[in-house]
Amino acid sequence: MSSDMFETGSRASIAAIRARNVSKYYVMFERPEDRFKQMVVPRLERLIGRSPRRYFRDFAALSGVSFEIGRGETVGIIGRNGSGKSTLLQIICGTLQPTSGSVEVNGRIAALLELGAGFNPEFTGRENVFLNAAILGVPRKEMEWRFDDIARFADIGPFIDQPVKAYSSGMYVRLAFAVAINVDPDILVVDEALAVGDEAFQRKCFARIEDIKDKGGTILFVSHSAQTIVQLCTRAILIDCGEKILEGRPKTVVSQYQRLANASSASAAEIRAAIVALNTDVGSRPESGDVSFPKLDARGGSLAELAAPTVGTHVAPAEDGAGSRGGDGLADYFDVNLISKSAVWLEERGAKIRDVRITTLNGHVANILRLGKRYLFQYTVDFNADATNVGFGMNIRGVDGLSIAGIQSVKSQSQRLSRVKDGDTVDVSIEFSCYTLPGLYFFSSGVSGTVDGEQVEMHRVIDALMARTAQEADLIATGKIDLSSSLRLTQRRNSLAQV
Image (cartoon, rainbow, N blue to C red):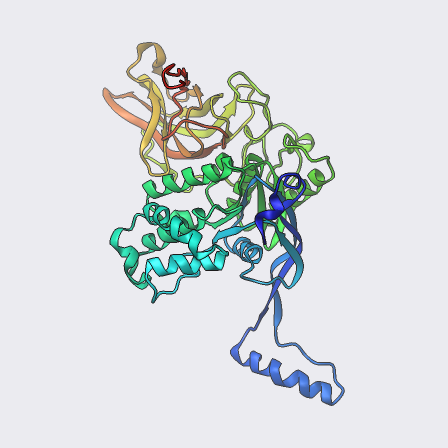
């Protein structure tokens, strides 16, 4: 549709995208011969007056999906594989027709739905640029003066004049993305295509997306990157099994998606039902960007219905304490599905570690943590041998297995026990600040000491538990650790330059 609909006076009142009860069904046959039977048998049965049989079943790729995206919004769609995200984007872009429902799009739309979509493999990159421009409704004369910018952004050198069938996957996505974002779209639709490019290209793409966002463009994209959703989006939509089950603030939607994605097959249905109930509750409230969502346990119960925290049975609530960046209820809970599958118990040499856990300072068990907040890493050690100079430790590793931070007290005279006896039990509590940036981390515990004159690792549990630092918006920190940096800007203007 024409972008003229966005002229001054009507821009604020017209939605960029409006979907109403969109459904898409596919006919599925169990066996190849059933397709032939469906073509013949029902017709014969109608001729003789019988009710026709069906040799197929309907598969709902999408079922009754409705939402509205305003001009200038950046909305992320997230969901498990096979949930219907890409099908929804194809319907929005007009490359696929819905079985029922309708989609209204107001403005010039540029889409990057899949690798090299719309490219003719026999055409050169240059020819495909003009082909895509024609599909997007951009006049050839306009594309001629835009071409240099597109070629510069794609940065594929002389390959621009080679047939695209000779391109690598990275070159495909470079050229396709360069075309999509350099035609000044009112609406940009991206389906996880940026994952193909290298890091430098991804940085350039996100910078361009931010530029489109700053100029008032509407952006709709699918991503499995939780941090990307939180950092870029003003709103997020969670799709599962073809249905929209949650819509709201990015941090909230990502948090619920992660619970669903990490759920075991036994608990997934209950968690999904809880999210659907939560979405229904939110839908009955006035729209607000500051809607808070109740925290749910793995069984779907609200925290108000839960008793005292117990590890492995429910989500433990937490008070907002010093160091917390706000009290929106998105962290400080225990996700029973977040279980370390790489835990290794080393040989016991006079001690045994048990009951490893992370708690808030108020004593509530948690494995979804808030950046910048203080927590306790706790475990219990049962000794079955006498030992001296006994120290205790904690180590944090990333998903790649590299050590990020930790402590070991065996060399500190003030932070170790001079002597323990066979039969003693020691409760260890290590207070720490969560400075790990959003992501998954693994916590190890250990105890060492001198037994029979030899310094030994009395017991150690590697990757004893797994915890996630919750997503945070507006982060400037990079890497794995938050340096608590502050930024001071002083802007000065040259008086001569203003003349």
